[in-house]
Length: 324
Image (cartoon, rainbow, N blue to C red; front, side, top):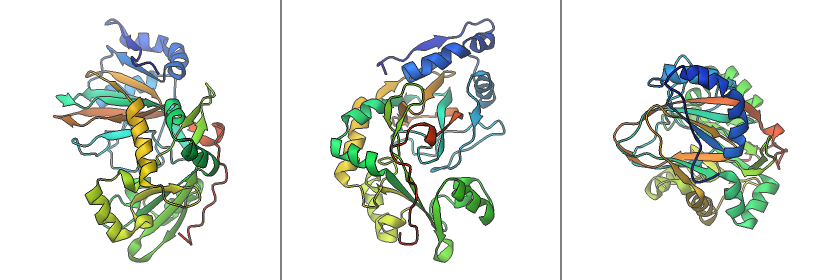
């Protein structure tokens, strides 16, 4: 990705006709550039963003799981993650823990912060090239594990995370996603899954670092919070944590290396109110800087992409939840 993203400006007259006419160009541009900014469209509310989304060439899709709270309106537009404004969101690839993920993210910026809040994009190909070779080799060969435990009155509930209401619906969702699970005492639900950490882009063929290894790992927590949670639940009982594919913990040095590489390759993107940012979710990890003031966006997932169609380096997803 170049340090400057392409910005396509819609004409004042018939902007939505212009967008419709740009469909084929956008399909070609996004894999080549990684991200594109659409400017000049009349987008001031989530309903406007939904109209833009529906004119784009990629069919919308719904998330299969949420790792943090976020709202959703009747048009299927998602609000920003519920995340403290004074903390950054490190670059991450949406739904990398799912068997089907959005190939394209459509984000309309309805209100931008008074200060800060820049979007961060990091090229996952550059991340892969810059990471320590032993870490890459281990993830390539064994993948990664995501452990997610639902405790009563601590963090999100499984109903909120999977947007289902019954145990039968939950079991069907988990089985369909190849997520092992077991119930513990006090309504505790433990889940475990194995995923490939490196995929190939289905259009460009480029290998990409595609996972939540660092983002959801205990070493990315604020130290004081990490100590409290570990004392209460242990490493394998945290709400969210990640491990090597063989079950051994990621070391602090490994997680810091991943976060440092993302910091090094991340490019800030300054967006204006009304801008629509299109991101190739496999080529680009996305985050944001801390900010002051109010900030609002409307996000849609699009272009459902199966991990199986991206040459995953790990295909054996079996895990043993009973010994976890």
